[in-house]
Length: 170
Image (cartoon, rainbow, N blue to C red):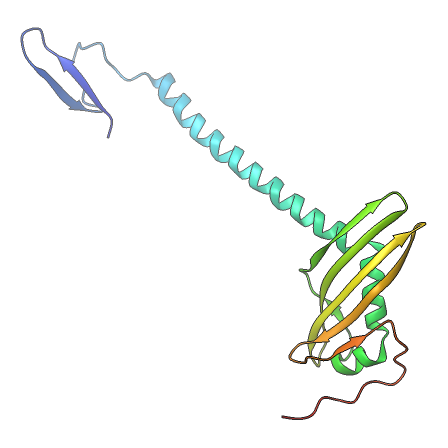
């Protein structure tokens, strides 16, 4: 609590709570100072809110840019058209919102290493990929789908015209 000290001519200093000023003391509250203090508090709240909003906008924009990249789209399309993946997940196959990995592009070359969650009506899993970009074209070095709860992965770079046998029933 804010307090004000007053010293009388012949007596000790005594403390009055804020808002209780003796008449004629000359220490009256300044309305302009109080309004400025309230404005600064509101201004700080707005600045913090705008800063947090910009951070959220940056993160969302980064996810949108990465997920719309050519290499991510090609990987997801390859998984969606693979008979073994369709057999395990069912249709439609949807990409999850959060993914991990990185993409580095420098001119016509680049490198991507990522993990994208996929799900369907029958189950879910993760699509793992490693790709390099040379002369503007992406080539997958690794593209595998891991079904949740199974140790075996489906290699999407091999010809999988026949779906693998279903896992043994526990």
